[in-house]
Amino acid sequence: MARSFVPFYHKKTEDFTLYYDYEANHFFKSKVGRQHPFLPILSGTAGIVIYALFKNKVLDWGFTYPISVVLFSLFISCILALGAMGGLMYTMNKYLDNHKVIVTLSQEEIRHYLHDGERWLKSKMLLLSMLFFFVLINILILLIVPNSGLFFFTNTGLSAALIILIWGIRPIKRIKIYKQFKKELENDQSELI
Image 1 (cartoon, rainbow, N blue to C red):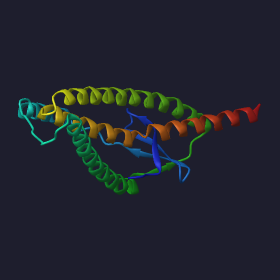
Image 2: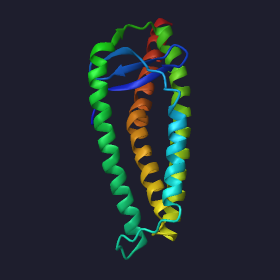
Image 3: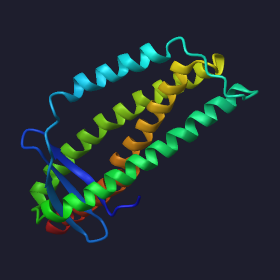
Image 4: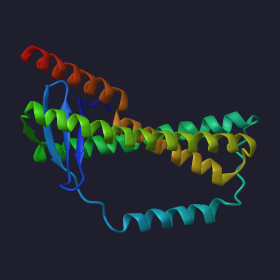
């Protein structure tokens, strides 16, 4: 599931994302599709259906310890996340071949994209932190009530979403690349003085 590029900057108003390919050492832009208007309605409906089906559902997995239920839920989350990431990689590779536009940026543009890209990353890190907090809370509740179908499926879904988001955002690699570009820009600035 490896890829050699990370999102660098996202321009929501123009629906494009700027990526940096660290193996090929170049930037490229790609158009981002708009979210379908029925997606929020569909996800809300799915949440209501899952709640209605599993709110009183008791699952007896045959596990003796509550931690076994949590680990089983996390195992299923990993399988779901790997399947989703494989599908996303297939789609990205197929899509990027036709829609990837390699761009050359000036130092001013890199500075601008670096600044806004860091702000974008901070907002995504806040999202990841909140999701991680909800996963932890859900795990604690699942340890207390290990036979709850609702908390089992909620934990599975939230954990899979967290794994997929971490894979998509690639926070550690992005931070390293941002630091690398900051250092290069500072070195170029000091050479001019």
